[in-house]
Length: 579
Ligand SMILES: [Zn+2]
Image 1 (spheres, helix red, strand yellow):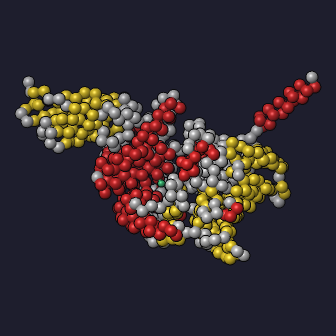
Image 2 (spheres, protein in one colour):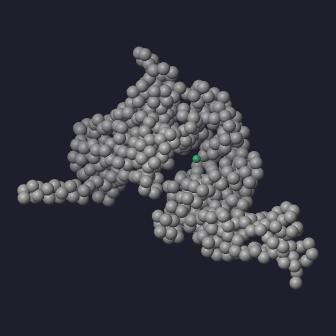
Image 3 (cartoon, helix red, strand yellow):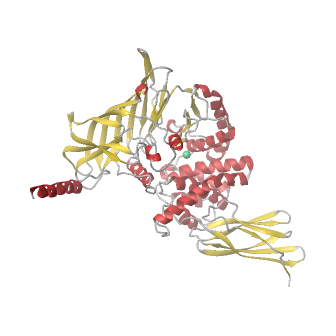
């Protein structure tokens, strides 16, 4: 009997703790000042520093949460020079490559009221080895997983990305799981949204043996790089500041880098790959005039200078944050030009909205392909994104029970397939709608700091064209209406007079998003393209006059992303004669 009462009490205790429990996202981390020391021979990282947190919840908080990678351990947490009480526990979350976090649950000596500030001195350390657990446990083959989650502190090469990859600085979020839809994307996006204004200062020091290594990071490098011999090895230091984090994911890379400091891109390469680095440099110089023509010269502010940093794994998946690109270097100059176009676009044009910032950079690549090899080559390039996009939209439609407009609006989405691939198509369709000159003028008039209301960009574009774009922004940007599903509903070819042909084409859109779609009439000789606006859930008809015998209608050349591209071709039989 006694046992049972005790048991019941314990259950109550647990419930009480849970009830008070933890609002893991109550605090915003407003500033970090971290001394990060790396010993590559041991794969070790040791951090001492100071963080400031603000209670952004509506109630007072007695507890707060600090999370770091599960391969790191908390050493000390102090407030006003005195240790605070905390318990450390593993917390399963795919925000970290290990699939778990070391979570410190801190009990403060007194409550922090809403909007109250608390400043802590912290210390933690441990190792950061290569670890692809979160990917292999959802079934990705080990080999592929390692080229994707390539973060590690290694003997000869180190590269470690922040939130979403390795929690090498403290964060605090609810758990996220890669097997649950978009939960990792969404959790990272929620964190970034809270941390937009956070300031971070990193003193990155490194000691090792062997070849002299250069520590790099993606903030404003202070340029205070010192280097000193110590015993067998040496120590080097870099200071790195982020006045505000914005969308940037803080990262550091350490390797025996050499640099080609030529404009327009700063390239850090590993000594054995000088030739590939030069290929990239030339590619950037070839691509630069194109980007300047579209967007003006790179602005040249320190924080937007384009940088390429080589990854030592030749199969590593490239990664970009801000205008720094981490990538293996190869000697394909066409690929290098495309990569350079993307980066130079970032350097020349900033927007706080991911669909504008990233979408435009992918769009610029497509236009560059078009300039080099024609429209079809550009459509093929965009086509590489189409399947992933259609799949992402399908998953969203299922998650949201197919409710129109309930999905992820492009303007606020954190899903990469949308703010990259879908956004690229949206820019391409915008150019088809209003023409290249009008779009260039609109981009020249765009001001990142003025983009504070959802309709800002639409107004900027609308000022350059007579076309009403309200429906387009509504269907593609402000709401997620999924993708159009266009098909040829009726085709009526006839021959009103000798050697004159007319084909009447009716297109139906079974999807909710409207589009102005190219309709191509292929004739015995040559072809004619007309554009036809078909709103969501409706039909539209056009007449195409042919100058030789009509043979085939092809709907959508690939410039409009569709959920189903398989019903878009129609072979025309003999046209009906007049009378
Ligand atoms: Zn980008």
